[in-house]
Image (cartoon, rainbow, N blue to C red; front, side, top):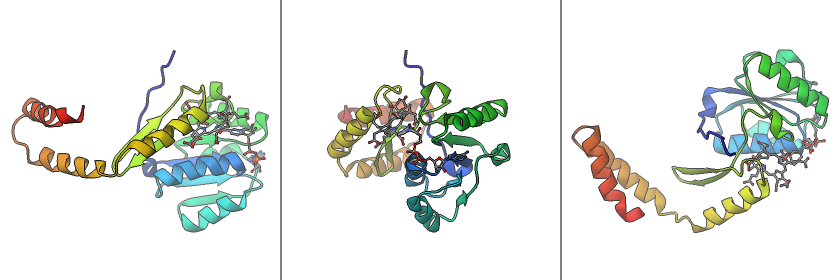
Length: 188
Ligand SMILES: C[C@@]1(CC(=O)O)c2cc3[nH]c(cc4nc(cc5[nH]c(cc(n2)[C@H]1CCC(=O)O)[C@@](C)(CC(=O)O)[C@@H]5CCC(=O)O)C(CC(=O)O)=C4CCC(=O)O)c(CCC(=O)O)c3CC(=O)O
Ligand SMILES: NC(=O)C1=CN([C@@H]2O[C@H](COP(=O)(O)OP(=O)(O)OC[C@H]3O[C@@H](n4cnc5c(N)ncnc54)[C@H](O)[C@@H]3O)[C@@H](O)[C@H]2O)C=CC1
């Protein structure tokens, strides 16, 4: 069963905690800041990779805390991503999040995740998130590369034109919808 419900989150409206500062921490913080450079992110770990420290220099809203995880790190957090190399720590963070109703992702344990990260294709304002329902992240990555290759840069022009038309259209909701459906038939 594939019951995942995709949403696009305004990450800059949230305060996100990442627990773990190794390869997984780097992968997740990079994914976050590539999409949402203004997101407020706190990363906590007793050891933090150099690449993450460099990212923090470029992103003032990325705060690093050189400590082992403590429940107090969850204060004021909206969303948590855990990827330490200690499974009991990952489990503890997950349990603490659940008791506070904070959404949590445990990178190496899909069963403990409230949400998954996706592969992301971006062409200007178009963003496509890819999931394989956890079956093969590597397939998601390869399929992203395929879509990046075939989607033309001219898509942004199409989107800009459609926005202009959308803003100029008169009439009620149904009339506008019918007109936009008519104009975009060529895209099928
Ligand atoms: C469930 C999920 C939870 C989550 O992490 O959110 C998850 C879980 C796991 N990943 C594992 C491994 C790898 N993950 C990647 C890469 C990515 N993983 C991502 C998402 C997800 N990974 C979620 C499901 C997404 C979906 O529905 O498809 C991407 C899309 C997004 C991102 O992480 O930002 C990003 C690609 C971004 C891009 O390039 O486009 C690679 C390849 C690589 O890095 O080149 C490998 C190694 C090869 C392999 O194993 O396939 C392991 C085994 C760990 C171990 O063995 O210890 C688990 C645990 C398990 O499956 O049990
Ligand atoms: N979902 C995914 O995409 C993937 C998941 N994994 C899994 O994720 C786990 C972590 O992998 P790596 O990042 O490569 O390990 P790593 O060894 O590079 O980094 C581990 C990090 O966890 C931190 N840490 C340890 N104890 C901590 C604590 N009590 N509080 C806070 N931070 C703590 C360490 O200081 C370090 O920063 C592994 O178990 C691996 O199996 C690995 C590859 C991909």
